[in-house]
Image 1: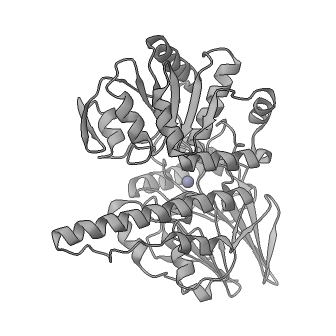
Image 2: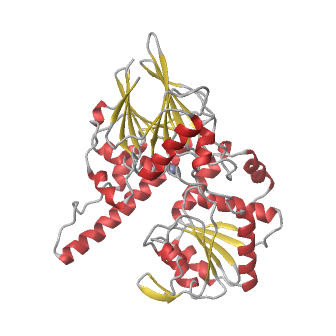
Image 3: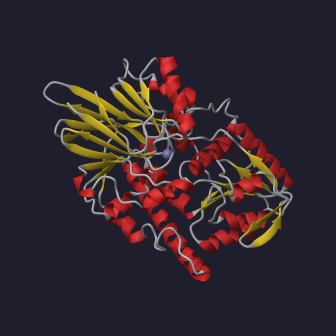
Length: 464
Ligand SMILES: [Zn+2]
């Protein structure tokens, strides 16, 4: 039996996840992610490395843009086959792709204007990478699959989706490949989540795997004693209520916003915070929250219990711009959760402009803030910031809660890998910066005694 894996993305870097699995004369693509690192964005514009008409099926591990974001390009190039994913991943991917298309359209218009004014051309044509109609072409190809059931693909190949605790609907995918004499299993980790996170269940055990393709985002790091999130949150809410200001939380639309709602509901139920008005003011987060509500079967036991015993009466999902503007006329303390998570755009900018100069307000960060973003600038203690073209002195309190990561750290990855039965033939370490991948690879060798390999971009490996 000959099985080959080609590493077509997320090899010695984090984004652009894409693998080609070839076996029994079939070609399958696992994930089709967009590159988000600035110096790799060029790859988003390159034609597919595998001719779309030769692909027998696409498999999605989850709905993050760096795993599904280039699907519209592949479909534009002629892919017409199925895209297999869990039902929640299919629904969330539609929101993510539509949102990305909209941003592409706006960005290209803006760039076109700027380039015209400056009389120069950018590295790519001033057209969107894909448009909303392009994104919608993808939707009819989604084919939702059940969890934990081998899906027969013909030619002796089966795919099984297994929960991995990263975001709603996220899975690993196990391929079982048979011929007359042998059986092999190839296990793609997807992004591995952590145990005991809110809402979703913990990662499932791997069980059988001859080969594992494993992510290593935090392969060289430990999250440490993740701060007591509920206690920190309660302290910040109570102090801000006492001061009489608003609590502004820039937040990512998928999972982070819903995790916050979960913590707020828990604190309210335990009577650790007062009843406050809570607004989720991000059109994308509101849509995503609706999707979460449609999949209570994916919730863990605690969330199911909580969902039964309490509602958040003060919670408003803000849908229109007019409603968004009216929030700032409210007197007294409100909690405002808005996107974008790094304050790079969206309604959060308006809320920052209205609250950042007020001493009694708090701006609370709950996610990673990349270099040079407004979020990072505020977090690093700037005295003045520019928001929507105007200068504002920063008077509000700035707080940060760490410990919200949706990715397993080095130890958590090792613990998860250990759930395999026996010794895998090889582990391919991907989806990490070079240092993270190399460190993870050596730690697996040292602590588990397994063979590992860190593949290069575009490298093809034949499995023995
Ligand atoms: Zn992810």
